[in-house]
Length: 208
Image (cartoon, rainbow, N blue to C red; front, side, top):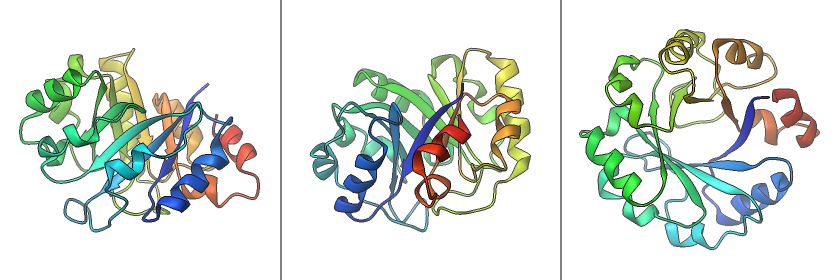
């Protein structure tokens, strides 16, 4: 069964807590999108102290850092409830340094790639990664249509490293989930499909 992580991209801390409360008991982990308005043209809550005070209950959290110069900000995101950090290949000048920094904090390491970034850009460090996040849309905004070209990236990475966690984020819904699963994804992130559903629990189950 594929793992489903609700994607959280909010500008208001109270709305963020409300959505976390909605998914408690329904999933194991949530994915928090951090956007700086520079690497992507949108912003979300960029306050580690406020995030550290959220009531996650039994949930854990992965961080999807859609930020420029991520190596400068990783340490401030060293929060106890964060188990995994994703940085974007397109924003990372020195992947080896970033991987070392994240592992030094005792976190799992993930690299995210945009739809038009070739998979060979992460091939050299694949053995050092816990996960690769493949964007199904251009990062920054929810409710975009899924780019089916990325299915080949999923297949390639699955063949290259069968045990790798491959997450797909963006454009995940009831219509796209089957092809995403067939390509070899092990985890998916969804926002609009889940939080705009009439029944959140059933929406999560439909993706699983």
